Length: 198
Image (cartoon, helix red, strand yellow):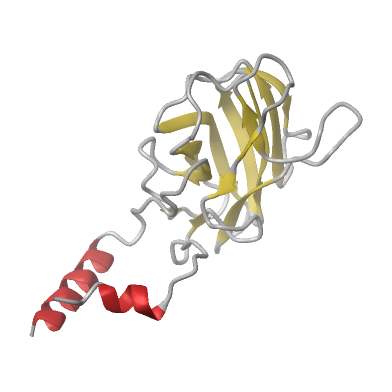
């Protein structure tokens, strides 16, 4: 009987708020969220409509300020339009209507448990699903490639890698329409059984 009650509560919880959950509570998680508390990872809009999202780091391991951070945000059915960047934006995006917006930013925000790096408007190009990913910035003559931050002044070591909140650069961290994304994590059968032990 106890298992039935637990499962019923789980199902009710999932049904009432399917798009609210921090995907990955691990350190230096980087994701896109549709709220400033890093809980909402799915939004519903129509074609040629915008939704505001936030590029957020959760549970950063270092203290101080992000003196340098870099990454890219990509969307497969539309365009991420950068509105506000917290820090001095050295590089952002490129063409206004590009499927990816690249960031290489100095003098970034103070680090907290939830640190907002940028505010973006996501424009859905065609009706349907749009997947949003965070990926490494491509290497260029001026910049190292990668997805990381530093608390040292300027473009210096040590650097601390961001980890996509989905667990992989190839998996969406947020989605417009469709089912909310989930993290790619290793779960053992033993860890599942442990939830139901007396």
